[in-house]
Image (cartoon, rainbow, N blue to C red; front, side, top):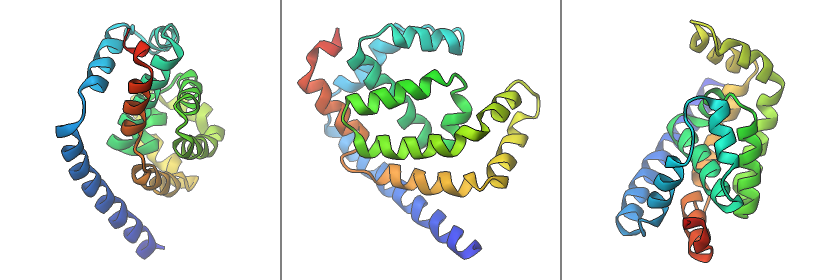
Length: 184
């Protein structure tokens, strides 16, 4: 079991390193429209509370919501995996927005992995949300994931998500090119 976990971690780390290198190359040549659009959308969102953040996200057009909600998932997963995404996004409406976003962008492989991660954590969301207001919440969350075998499951799903081609960034860029109205 430990050998398998070590191998999975090594493979994931290798994939992340390769992806970071690929992203650096891609970022040098990509059109800056995605970053500009995300910056513009971010200024339209109310960050004073997670509830207001979600409400303001829902005020955007469907295409803009799809771009932004999938970007949130990508950022969280690339930074700390699905475990981090579900921890940081307490309002479950964000999960719905991500599902709608993946479907709208036709990122079906990303959607499938996201739904698998969501179904894995769903039975534990109530307990997780109870932890979020406590002092020692972070020390409680990881043991919950380990106790329920979610930690290894999320690592596996994180690796699959990292490895998808085309990447979510590439899908969003293509969508923006085909739907310039999202830039308004």
